[in-house]
Image 1 (cartoon, rainbow, N blue to C red):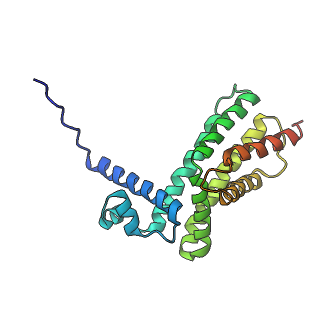
Image 2 (tube, rainbow, N blue to C red):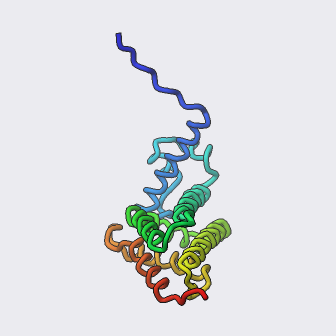
Image 3 (cartoon, rainbow, N blue to C red):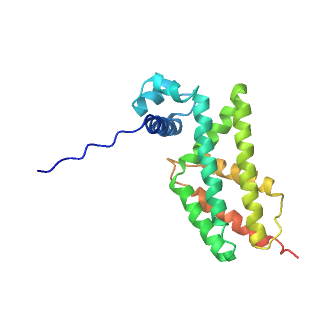
Length: 208
């Protein structure tokens, strides 16, 4: 006789993390579709299939959730670029090819650039949110700056500006292109970032 194996029950911590992940995913969808200001806590909870009580068990506020959502994205993005640079034997062509592959992930998820715009604007509109949002944006800029510094160093080139300035410029480019998009499909943000990065590297003088 065949016996069906009962599904493994989640531990309390696993269940909590699953709920948290569902709330973050629901918020991401709604913030892109409606904007942060037009999305309520109840909207997020309903979209995820939970009660508002479940929301408050995981996040203190909608702003708290937004910061965590963008923190996770920032950490993943910087980690992906740093991983590209982790092989000391990689050639310049290897590094550029790996960066091109990373850029394609940006084009596959253009909604993150839209969320970046929402996040920046919310920090400007809400003084209570400004400190947390600016701290995260600064940390993201610094992480990108480190990666940019390493890219030019590995290419044996002198960056045309301070890496922090270049990082802030690429962040602005990403958000600016996001605002130009029609239905999130017209402008390949990752591709355009690589066009500018390749141009900067090609024009940069070699290290002496």
